[in-house]
Length: 374
Image (cartoon, rainbow, N blue to C red; front, side):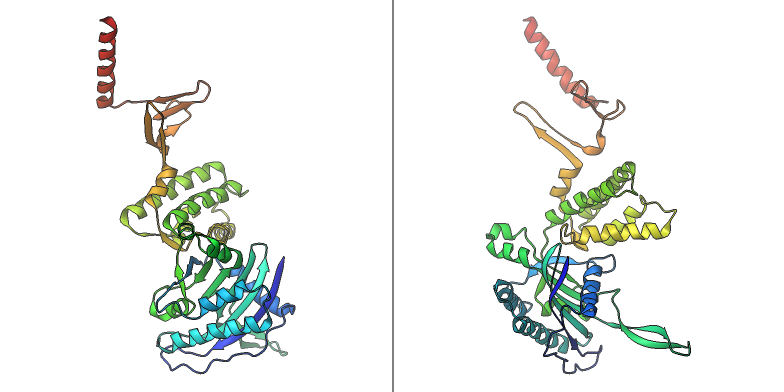
């Protein structure tokens, strides 16, 4: 199911290091049932969150220079029970005004065609704003001679933002504590925070907001699910990938560096069949899209949560009389494992007990034996 409710294309006229020109603002919307319009919107949606178009997840800024008028108008737009074509067109004009204002004061910025769309698919209803550039293409004329022509580049999104209607409403209904764990928008900006492209994110009021705990947990769970469910990947590959992934996240957490989906892909490639390079690329694309989609919301980069990571790398249990904590990689179901779990006898056996621990245990047992004799 894919439905385009509203769509329009405006143009932000700006070349790098040159004065901005008046924007081209359409006064009428595109026909949402036109096959070409549907193809354009679906084309952009299909590459949103793909390997070369990873999204950051977040919320609107609450205040400051990056707040602007767009978030305020989105609030009214989504809250309306009777959204009209005029409502949609007015909202896109607000966005274009904000983009113009920020690009005008940013010499390194560049413009492009701005696609705005209100659409629905199996993931829900969304408001999309995406900047599309042109690229050169080749065609044959009537004499079969090659000619250059310009076409829309639907292989890469230079800038984009997308708001999830239902998640936005959930956020508004949540209390302050719940809101800290919720995100309702995503945005694509190849060089977030760098002067050339940061104006787009600022103009629309977006800010990264996915928590380290959520991103860390989602990455580990969603990647494991992908390896488990994919017919071309074996269980041993899944286990080895998981071990490498956990080690990678741990090292990034220790160094205070960002976990990056591009680096996760590099780890995954070691466990994806390499005999067919095209298949390997295809599976990698599927993995990154799976991680970066609306369901899993793993950002293109994030700081890991050590506390969350420990839940996946350690087993920690406490009873009334005892407690233990150990690394998962020391556990096994064969007798050579450092910590051996015998399912048949329901026993957990610790092998190669350290000398210091043996001394403590034997000393305590000696005391107990002496007490019994007396």
